[in-house]
Length: 159
Image (cartoon, rainbow, N blue to C red):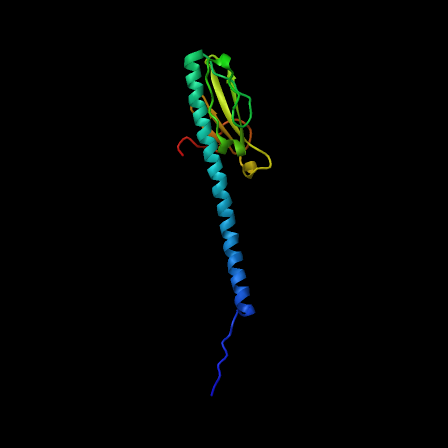
């Protein structure tokens, strides 16, 4: 009578091949996932900035001037009640990765510039600043100089 032994477990070669495959997949998937998260956070910041721009236009119609906001993150306490009750929105997703500021120029013509600045130490810290102007120009400042340069900076109006 022949007794067959049934092997249990894995050989060292099988384990090493499996580890190698998992390492290769991780090396490809992790940067793609990180890039996706950065783009998602940037998109939330852009949406928030568009909402702030809409609120600035409403404030301009009510007050005949734009409202400067220098509070960071979520604009929770800005503008004040003296600004005719114009409340800027609160965005938790965007505020986790970006600080925001609205600067106003009296003009003529009056204008504003909304800046989204990546917060140091967060996932988007290496991302570039986002800007939205009262003229509708929206860009990601690829060389971090605060001005729009068509050949260098990324226009996010069409995205």
